[in-house]
Amino acid sequence: MAVVSTDLDIRRVTGRIGAEIVGVDLRDALDDDTVIASIRAALVEHKALFFRGQELDDAGQQRFAARFGALTTAHPTVPSLAGSPNVLRVDSTEGRANNWHTDVTFVVSPPAASTLRAVVIPPAGGDTLIANSVTAYQDLPGDLRELADRIWAEHTNDYDYVIPPAETAQTKAYREIFVSRKYRTAHPVVRVHPETGERGLFIGGFAQRIVGLSVTESRDLLRLLQTYVTRPENTVRWRWTPGDLVFFDNRSTQHYGVDDYGDLPRLLHRITVAGDVPVGVDGRRSYAIEGDDASHYTPLAA
Image (cartoon, rainbow, N blue to C red; front, side):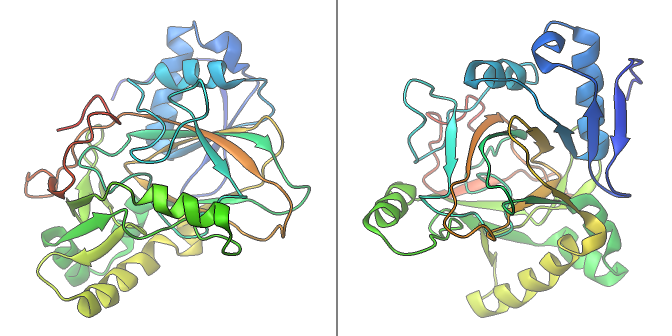
């Protein structure tokens, strides 16, 4: 990988994942190819990047994300923000994503990267946790790593990771929309990163069954593997302030929205960069089981 020299101030947040980039105004940096190349390199290295106090609006966030590839629409089933087809509202009144997951892994071509921008933040609580699935894989004992290399998992959206704080007409309607079009996709449990060749655990909440195993057997094995992803050593916790932008590599991370802010409002806007089809250790590519047409969502749909 080429080393790009810039004046960016990149500060590691933890020993294994996350870096804050200080002293850059993303509005100005968007026309600087060298800065963008450096941000891209930092993303691949640190898995999650944090930018404090950026004065971006939806158009600015879209312009930033688009510097790293074609954009997806907001979501395969959930409507976008009105007038902004690439923007998904992550709104606490509709549900809270307090379950570890990687974005939209139930389609064959999940996003390569996600941007989250703070719009409304509670005065305390509502942090986001992000985990490094590459170091999680490296932590596996040898025999368990060899098993993980060989197995595949079915991912589906017919499992609602957005858990409502209480069942209301609004949250029920959101759930119905979320599963209005059902997807099931088989992905390798160990994904090879297309840029670095690193191996990482590619599971999370949408992974509901191991191919060839029963649901009960699958839960036990997935739960075991997931404990390595969420070990504190492999995670970073970001405390939001208004205007923050978080940028994470969806191919090598999972994330979790902490639900500890009661009935206070919390609103983030998400824009995702289209990704390719995951590839396993043996070179096989992910494949659709149900609902294979995601062309309305991602331009890189298989």
